[in-house]
Image (cartoon, rainbow, N blue to C red; front, top):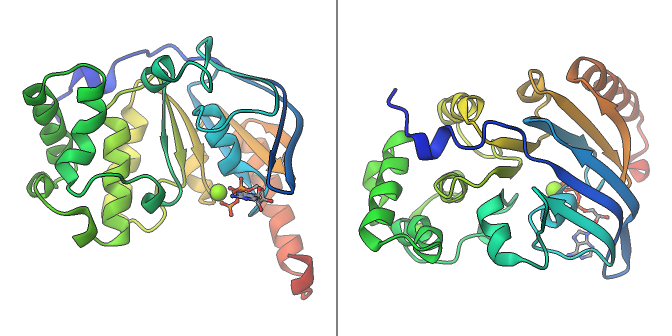
Length: 250
Ligand SMILES: Nc1ncnc2c1ncn2[C@@H]1O[C@H](COP(=O)(O)OP(=O)(O)OP(=O)(O)O)[C@@H](O)[C@H]1O
Ligand SMILES: [Mg+2]
C-alpha cells in the first residue's frame, strides 16, 4: 500500500500526556478526584466498566473540557486553554458520531479542519479524497452525512481525525458499530500509524499488543501495566462480577 508521509510517519516518538491532580465534575457527578497520570508510550489502551470515566478522560486529554482543578498537558500544551495548539496536537474520535459531525457532506466534514489549519481548499480536498480512497470509500466525498448508516458515520468521524494527523490520537471505541472487514482494515491502519494512540475499548484483544493498558474504575486508575498483566485480570474480574445475578449491582 502506498505510504502517505503526512499521514503515517509524523512524530514516531511517543508524545507525553500528563495529568496532575485533576478534579473534574459533570453536573452532580464528581468524575475525577485528584487524578494523576503520565503517559509517554505510543500505544496505550484504556479499559473499564461503563461510567468509569473513560470518555470524560478522553475529553480532558483532547482539551474539550477543562479540569476544575489540576493540569492537563499534551506535548507540553495546555490543551484546554491553548485551543489553537491543541488542535494540531491531539485529535479525538468521539464515542457517539452524532456529537462530532458538524457539516452536511462528508467532503466538508473531512476538509474543514485542514482549511482551518491553513491549507488551501484544493490541498484539503486532495487529502480528504486520499483518505476516503484509503478506506475504499472514494465515492463518499459528495454524500450527505445524514444519508449514511451509524457505522458509516462513525468511519467518517474517524477519517476526519486521521486526516488532520495530530501528534496524539484519542479513540473512544473506534470499532463500535463497524463491520468486520472495516474493523480489520482499520486495525491494520492504526497499527501502522506513526502517531501516539490512546485507545478506549471494550474489545480486549484489540489492545493485546499495546505498550500499556490502564484500567479505570470510578474515576481512578485501578490497574496499570502491560496488556499481558492487566487484560487477563480485568477479564477475570468482569466474569466474576458478570456471574452475579444481582442486576442492581451493575
Ligand atoms: N453530560 C454528563 N452529565 C453528567 N454526568 C455525566 C455526563 N457525562 C458523563 N457523566 C458521568 O461521568 C461518569 C463517567 O462517564 P464516562 O462517559 O466517562 O464513562 P465511560 O467510562 O466512558 O463509560 P462507557 O463505557 O459507558 O462509555 C459517569 O458517572 C457518568 O454518569
Ligand atoms: Mg464512554
